Length: 134
Image (cartoon, rainbow, N blue to C red):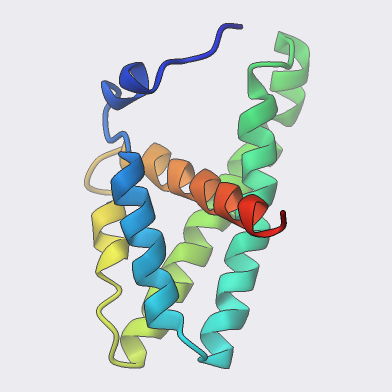
């Protein structure tokens, strides 16, 4: 395994530039504000993002057998992460917020690579939470 260069990542379909990820993260934080329900939904999303980031960051370290044995759990975690993003966006919209960040992430029904982009953003949230825990 060798480290990927950020520029290589940006060439991948539906990659997420760090500036865009940060902007989306800040949009979410602003829309959540002090809303207790939104904070609870975000906490659930953050928990799932951390779990998914664990799968993602370990994937290249695992051998073929371990990947096969964990693939179903990884996929289920990814599905749950997407559900959490959808729940938060739906709630925020019901409260009169734009939740435009959800549209920027895209929908896998429109482009299968959006699933990866959503996963990337989940990893970004886990990264930001890791920095906050410093």
